[in-house]
Image (cartoon, rainbow, N blue to C red; front, side, top):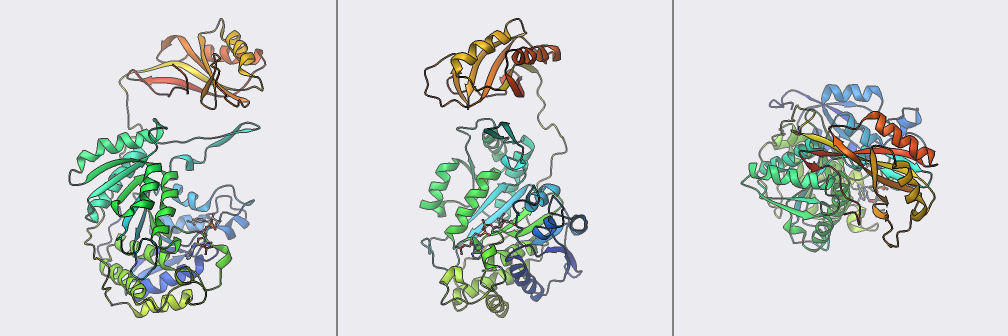
Length: 489
Ligand code: NAP
């Protein structure tokens, strides 16, 4: 991690204005950061819609990548993902290019902002894994009518995000970390985060570590949000929960974020480009201003960060300059007037906001090993072959059994969207044309013979069955590395 002990030298930061309301909120944050007296050497760079329109499929041009590689710090506005131009989101491109694996999304109550939760002291942080999970973007149409998205979770990714959550809790003197997963259903993927959390928690005996099922977490967040302090979770869960938590304190206008990697940090609001408000001077810039506060803390400009955060809190306490999302159209002030009010409040201290003592966040060391988990023994016990067939199970099953006859495999079962449909079970499964055929090897071995697999695939094709995906059934140290289908014994 880059150290910034000396803020007397200008700190280079890449500034991406972004799309829609981006330029307005970025301009507000930039003015305020400059007004704190911290010397930033802003390098303006571009990404998003305008770049897609120039034909850059990633939405991020090389000049911007070069700037970030130099500065390793970014303050950015939201980027639109235009339908029909590039194939990937420019935001996801940036996060993946610079491996910003941890997305920190704090929300806190603002005195003066009316919400159903006012007075309950909400002050919590979602720590969202930022590069894995369904956002790996590995999707296939397996048949013309059946789509698949791979949910990839690694032990390495889990270790990094879990340690980041505990370190963040320590830096802010927080006492509890909840890990929210769907491990009860997705035992391998979501379960890996839960297991990793339980393995690492003893390294942080000063922090109370709790696991919570993510759907109950959403429910608890609405009922009693004040019970949470730090919530660590997978990418998709974190995306959804953090929009929910922003609504608890007044909406997306109040939700800042930091995307942290070992080398690069990108600070941005949680919200998007809100195109209908672009250029109208009505958007609330608080989320991006607070993202800039997070940037200042990251570079150890703590006095400036505190001054800017306090000025925002005082502005809300005063209640005279509030944007449309807080007070509605008739009473509202514009983005620029709000920013001017914050500027005028620099140096003032809020009377109703509890102060938090902070230590510098210690970014966890990233494990160097690529294969973080090395089993003593591995075996391949069978193979799942996914086939396309518009046949009812009673007709498909005998064909697949006949295909396996004489090969190195025996059909164990066929499932349709995760439920066993052959041998016939009498379930009411509404069968579609993508089936998983599970074959067990007649003699398990360290690996499958390539000829054996080819012979099985050829036999399936001979039966008129089109295969589109195969997956080895592996066991590591005697433990199955695959789940059973619903109804499989
Ligand atoms: P959005 O831009 O976040 O806007 C959704 C709604 O949230 C707005 O209509 C507005 O609600 C409210 N809102 C958002 N920001 C606000 C602010 N600063 N102050 C007050 N209210 C605010 O979400 P979207 O419309 O789904 O997405 C628009 C585009 O942004 C899409 O292209 C999407 O891909 C992109 N996006 C980018 C990022 C990013 O760059 N990190 C994140 C999310 C989405 P009301 O209508 O109730 O006033």
